[in-house]
Image 1: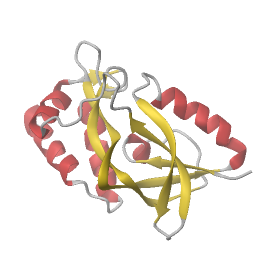
Image 2: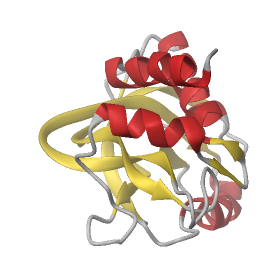
Image 3: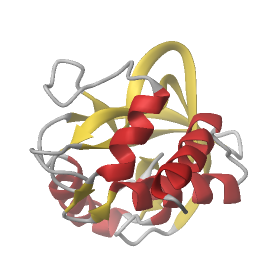
Amino acid sequence: MQPLWVFGYGSLVWNPGFAWSSRQIARLDGFRRSFCMLSIHHRGTEAQPGLVLALDAAEGAECHGVAFEIAAEIADETLEYLRARELISAAYLEQVRPLTLQDGREVPAVVYVIDRAHPQYCGGMALEDQAQRIARAVGGRGPNCDYLHQTAAHLAGLGLPDPELEWLSDRVKVLKGV
C-alpha cells in the first residue's frame, strides 16, 4: 500500500483535521488559489453567502501550499473525512494531480478544485466585492473573515505570502474597524 498525499491551499493548511505523517511545501501547476466559491455552509448561509478559497484552473498558473503525507493504513478514513468536509455541496471536484514537493519529488495528490459549472462558482469577482462579502458573512464554522485572516497568516508564516489574500485581509480589517 502507498501513502496518500493531500494538497492544502486554504483552511487545510492551518486546520487539516486529519493525522499526517509528514508535510512539506508543494506546488500545483495549472491552478491558482482564488476566492471563487460562494460558501453557503461553513462561512456563510444561503441568504448571505460568504466566500471560500478554491483551486481555479488557469493556464500557466501555479499554487503553492502544503502537501500532507498520510499513512496508507489511514488513507481510507482520511478520504472519508475529507469528502464529508470538502464535498458538502458538490462545488469541489476531487481529483488526483501531480504535485512538486519542495524536496524536488513529484507525487500524485488528492486535490479539490472548483467545478466552474456549479452555481456556487463566482470567479472573476473584484477584490473590493470579495472584501465586502467576507467582512459580513458568517456560517456554521464562524465568521468568513476568520477564515481569511487565518489562511493569509499561515501562508505568510510558511514563507508563502499571497498578495491578494494579504490585501483582502488588510481591507477586511478596515471594513470591520479592527
